[in-house]
Length: 259
Image (cartoon, rainbow, N blue to C red):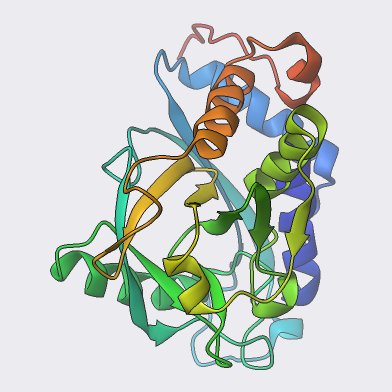
């Protein structure tokens, strides 16, 4: 949780969102809300820092007051499938000189929505976006990894990639538990066609294998061994069943709060 809020505050700095909370404050607020809402199922926690001034047609960030809101909602399978058929989107990933690609800004979701909609209307589960140089960037809401000859690759941040918390989690697990270093470098679209395995990662997507891209099977068309092993470890960790990584989790006990 702490890493998510560190990233949110980085975004606040770029967008001049002066909210009166530290990362520790935001963690404490989140724990209290989850406790008070009393969910007994998987949930998605959505924090939002925003400009709260009651003004229109004012484009000057420095003149506008800021605020913070937080909601929790029950959440199921984000991608709708445990193995994905993807297409390369005709839409390109936003470029950093246009809008900061390394932060989670609401405006960037328009880019993601257009790509996702195009993919699903064409019968695919998800879209893979290229950057303006034509290299692989990410999914509509996920980071992407490729396995080739036992090595793991993912696009570098310079390819307009969001620095995903789950992306970092997977890289640590691959190195610490499987002895696989992750090579962060530019990846060509055609490399994905020839990969042994491809998978997507994200807070909502968790780790989901890609078995087909642009009507071409990835590997043998089934989730690969490295994907499945990291996925197994990940799901074990996020529900608190792995003592070694329990410090990545935050314990919360739902409680009844009188109205």
